[in-house]
Every structure is written in C-alpha cells, then in structure tokens.
Length: 84
Length: 388
Image (cartoon, rainbow over all chains, first blue to last red; front, side):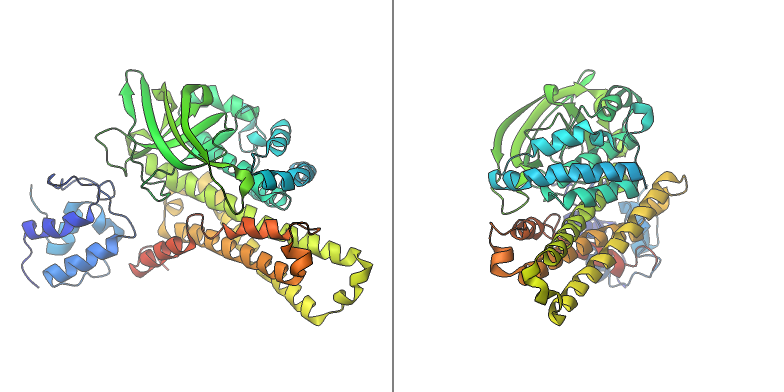
C-alpha cells in the first residue's frame, strides 16, 4: 500500500462530493451526506480510494460510519486521525 | 383494524367508481370522490382523535387505500398521498403548527399536496435546490416543481427546500403553506397515459409563512424523509396498486360468473390456472405489504424503534415493497387484459375498466423507478450495510 497523503486523499474525495463548491476547502468534520455523498455513490468513492492507495477496506472499515465525515474516512484509509 | 371505517370505505368506493370513468376521460381532479372522502372524515383518517381526526392505525389505512383503489386508482392515490403528508405533519410538526393546523386537518378542511420534486433532483426527496429565505419571523420561498399531484386543487402544501441559501441541497427542510399563503404560477397540466385523475401539474410556488411552519430545522429534515415520508409513501402506493389489481380481479370473476353465455369459460382449465396464478401473486405481495405495515407500525410507535426504522434492512424492505407491488400489480392487470381479450379488455367501451386500470398501473414501475430502488438496495447489500 502507498503511504496515504492527506492531499491525495482530498483530491480523490472531492469529485464525489457533488454539493461541495468548486475550490471550497473540505471541512473534515462535515457530514459527507450534506456534501452530496449517498448510498449509491459511496461504492464509487470506495473503489477510487482503494485504487489510489492500493489497499483493501476490511469489513469493519466498510461500515457506513466510515463514510460519515472526511475525518472518519481518512481514519479508515490511513489508520490516523487526520489534521487537527 | 377498524371495521366501521372499512364499511365506510366500501360505501365511498361506490362513489369513486361512479366517477372513475369521467375523471379518467377528462383528466380532471376527482372532485366528487374527494368531496365524499372529506365529508366522511377520511381526510383526517390519520389525525389523532385529540385533534378531531379518526386516528386510524396503519393496517386500517392500508386496507382502506386498497378498497378505494379497487374503484378508482387515481382518487385513491390522491387521497393516500394526502394521508402521507398528514402523517408527516402529525409526527413532525412543532407545537405551534400542530395547534393551528392539526384541528383543521382533523376536520377535513385541508386537502394537502406534496411538493418534493424539483427540476434537477430526479424526484429524490433528500435533495432540494431552492432555499428557505429568512424574512424576520417569517421565511420565504420560490420553487419550481415539475410534477405536483392535485397541485391546483390543494388547500395546503408541504414542500421541501434546502435549509438556507448557504446550505447544500442535501440539507433539506419541509415548509407547510396554506393555499392563501402562496402564489402558484406557470401551472401546466400533464397529459398522461394513465393516472389521469391525479391531475398532475407542473408549477412554480412562491410564498411566505411564519417560521413555525417549517419542519426539520437543525438537520432533522432527512430524518423526516427516512422516518415518515418514505415508509408512508411506499405503503400508500403499494396499497393502492395492489388494491387496484385485486379490485379488477374480483370484478372479472363476478362478471364471469354472472354471464350465462360464459358458462363454458368457467370450466376452462387454462382460465382456472391463469386466475389461480394471478390470485397467488397478488396474495404474496399483499402478505409482504401487511408485514411491512405491521413492522412500520411497531417500530414507529416504540421508543426503541428509531434505530430499526432508520436501518438499511428496513429501508431495503420498504424499497422492495414498492418494487414488488408495482411489478405484481401490473403483471396481474396485464394477465387479466390478455384473458379479457380485445372486446372485454382492450376496448375503452368494454364493460369492465380493464384498459383504464392497465394504463393506470403501467405508471407504477416508473414512479420512483423500480430500477433505481433495486440499484439502491443492491448497493447497500454489496457494501454489507445492514446485517443479513
């Protein structure tokens, strides 16, 4: 697996957030649902993240809670807590 | 289940049946049927007795919708969707709106239309592009809707909006508005193949209402969709569709037995097998419907029920209900039309309304498309969301 960078993570995430204004920063605490991610689109984000970082989400990491915010998703990708 | 209410429903079904053909032919709002439903207290069927309503339980609501739809699917659908809006207001209105509106709903004074579609949300009630605008103690709105059932005839409207100008379209709230609080412009009726009595129109609605008429502030709008709008919508639609197909089956069987010239048909093996098959499939879908109705009644009235109500499994079952009812009801009427033949089914002047029910039920798979719901169910299933 490649070492995840926050910058690359945000670049992969951004196109999946259809309600995030172009150029607006990704708020790490904001509900991804509010930003336009839904049950239909989550799987596409999953596939993009796994390909970008050469990893496979475990069943636990696949839980809907992982997709709650950018921070919870980053934690699933990197095992870390993300920026303060 | 309330027997007196079911008896009233049977009486009302006769009124609906009388006007079903003209409502369809003229593509007009079913004023006679809705008047009869209003006078019988049925517009307040789901309103608590404390507010003057009939406080029927969900199994009674579903059974009534089925009986009414057996006579006129358009009128039943207009009424059932009104009841869906009532259920949202009963469950989620704040104290001021509850005090001012629920007694009027209970008295049957308000026929409600729902406005959840907008030009770019594909009918998804979890997305709204037009914002709620602050106007001191009031809020204002202006939104286009490509399709509103009974839009010209409603006494009140429940519409989805995004919570503010800065909110994203996923931050949905609901606003209630009386007819006198809004202006309708650019009203254009749809020309439909079936369900013509639902009098669907495209319109733009603008208005201003007190802030107390907004539901779902503080991020609770999507919960209103998950807890009430979706379950009540799927139960209402499924009840109506299955009721329409069942009603036609019953009428065809009665007509067959009543016609001495068709005595030989009663002895036909082929006909017997086909009728047995139609009934079995309707039975199976009705059992599924009853199970969902009972589950929903249980989880929404239990303090521990919220987690189950919002679970992926429960929503897959709700979506499944819609898909199953739509496909089963249409397959049933298609089989009945095949059997009734050209003169008995395909002709508009046939003695039974086979072609009308066929046209009406053709819409079922298209209203929130079956494919979209199966895709949604399959996606969450594949992700392992919601235990199996």
